[in-house]
Length: 465
Image (tube, rainbow, N blue to C red):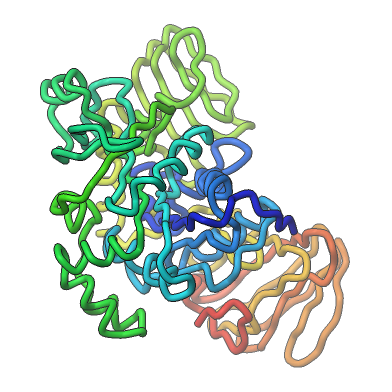
């Protein structure tokens, strides 16, 4: 693993990596939110992590996430060639908006380092790495101010909040007003007045942060002071945003201008704005295409699928193995309503892709019915699944690639490509990859229940129940 340090060690970084996966559905899901999507060689989270290394030592980067996403965080950091200390992964028991998440990270940093300067970054933003030099320069302001970063607007956007700067203050400006997402006419006025987009990035001194937190949101401050048990803290802390809880109330707020490419990829229309277009303004990702008389579309599908349009304009078409989305680009913010409808029906497609990532690798569902399921399972080198059994299904494993170590009912044996084994229901078993190459198997499940809830774990090195 690479372990070189790029930052100077003075600034700590907090990356907020929760998220519900609703705004870019069906690309993102609740258990696979947009920060982990790879729309290029690396994900939005990986890009954020690399930006933090421009200002922080790797040992000083903290990630606030949740239990279902912590393995994405650690896995994607390892893909980059780095190891982050396990204690730097801060697991929220539940999502309670941004202020408790930031307070969680700030408290951990203060416990370990004392008084510190901390940058706070969302994991799902697009931002030029050159911006980190300006961000690091804001350290001069944090001794007296809560610092936020405002993006120089490229247009009168209605999807972002605005910050109105006042008098100059060192490398930034005193903030006179925070403005909620406006209507278009007001957005045009704010751009003319020199207002900035609210980026949701911050830099804080721990002493000033906690002083302002105690003054303006004492319920959050008190919950974190009352207990060292994070579960107890989150049972008592209110759900509140950093802007509403502190930034809009404090008179010690400064803003630093960032004249850089930036987006929070808030919907598919924002995604359309960020990617290269053909001569007719179409953004086509992944698939072969024939687009006749069609312009201004965003198209996403699999590389081996041909997508054809005739006289289709300004549309979003997103095709995944288990879901198809079609809507006007101007309506893409309503995608979250589809997710809400799926959750009301308890439809797992709101939560999971056909490919599901686990701490040991991943599986892809190839075929599924009420009484059978076929999976393609990949296990990373030196990884193993939990010791488990199923009450309601049997499993047949066929090795496609690599070497499998199989434990069944207390016995251990190895399988090579083309070899197989059958595991009856009610029998303890475990699959491991002892080799240096990725293991790939086909699993055929048969029984009265082939859902993921029919798993009884006896031993799991990843801390799952």
